[in-house]
Length: 466
Image (tube, rainbow, N blue to C red; front, side):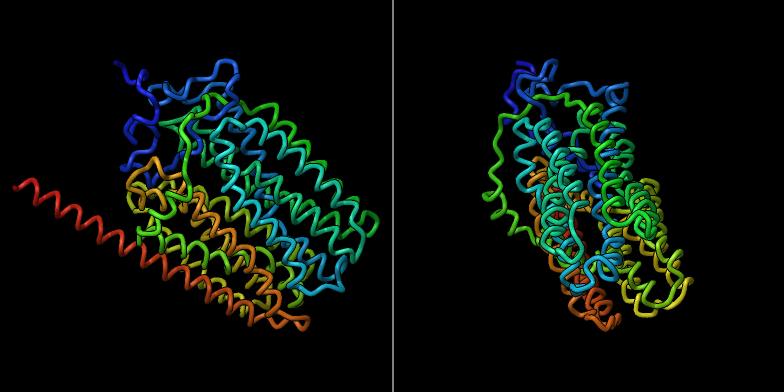
């Protein structure tokens, strides 16, 4: 009997997924990316043949799918990480009657839904609903952003519903599928393809602030036109992405019992500390992204320059996302995460001293580079902690759900500490402490994992001698 005649759930883990332990730190294929397309999709590769399928490693359809996924990342997560522009504009102009804490709930809810939606989007994606998620998420995101442009001044609930909840759900439906679909076409070149896709969020986070700041600062244009123009740009890119992206592999018949796995994962101490580290670290992680521009303006930095603070940060994040590819084969993912989370935490504390153009540039450059590396290495880090790589998708989904909760509460707490008097040292200290707490969990996870690997190696040596 050939391997393609064996049901997928009977294949060994090494055959069912295209990630090996030896290269887990270099690139990760989420297990949710195995067989995705509608069951009736013409030309789809049967799921049971997935292990033996030949990946094209390129071609027109493959690179068009990569381009479409790039556009989606720019429109979804790129828009979310640009919320600092709105945080500044709402606090000073459009929602001036609301506190910074209340305003930040809009962005934090959006970020939570984008990240945490993977918990329910993943299973739907596994069952072959790629096109449903792609088209439905695009329509919802586009509709929500156009509704956002109709929001009136000081009508907090209108902006919360459209930009926070509606756009967050739409982007959440798109985020995971746009990353996973790339693995249908690439195996050997997957690192390159996924790096290109993930860099879309950084490019989007550069384009959106430039566009919005220039439009919002023009009295003759105003909020409605600016938001509508941005919604039009995003809708156009989403339409192109829907036309470009194609699924290739049929859905898997194997069901994933997430909560059963969660109980077992809770006994894996390195994974538990890593997941806890993600949840704690992200509480402080979004503080510079949401508040750097407002912080610069309030400290008297020239508004024209302050408007480009987030652009500098996100441009550096783009290079930070590309950097790990040059060293990841020589340095473990865990060590990279530990080093760059420490740099991020220290830089957050450094925001206490922000007072000039020079300090804004230094913080934006350092934090952009370090945060870009960190985001890129999260999934490979979790992969190195996973013994059965067929469970990688479930481990990532649970970890990112906890991460989403951290993103939900972090910036509102920072806003409450900031108060209407704009006392900047308090949210900076809080965010820095939470980031360092996450760093401590990462260090613990790496140490525990190293001890476990060392013990396994010693047992293997003893067995060989026996």
